[in-house]
Image (cartoon, rainbow, N blue to C red; front, side, top):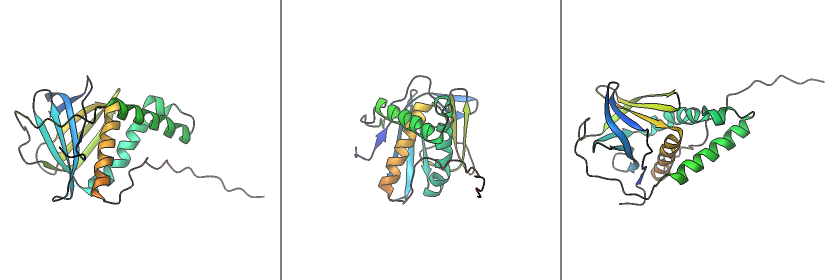
Length: 193
């Protein structure tokens, strides 16, 4: 197992759905790794029912998805309650560090799977939907045609997924700066004397 392979041992309450009406059990592990031959990130999801879902994330998809991931994490009640943008970023960074430290990224990804409901070939993600429902995020990954999947995760797991993506992008050398999303621009009144 290469050092670039990272995974996430999931927390209770996280789940994976292969379709809006069907579940594949709880989230057990997530791996994000760069595949140099494909020049893409391979995201693999391992569930408690020994199912695996796989998808490709292109540079373009990661670049477009990243601000939405950051904004979703900024909507966390603890972050959103802060009075200034600097305070919000500080709290978000604190939550990110806690999530990463609380995740076991040293466990090798479990390659033993009983089924791949979406097939043996990873889907190429062309549509993503991310929304908050209560204290969880629903992150749907879909190909142009055919079936995708949805992850239901808490902030802590979404922070860790972002870290896995950040590490894989650094290995890919795509030249993407995956930092906080830019703060909404506020027009300042012109000051005159």
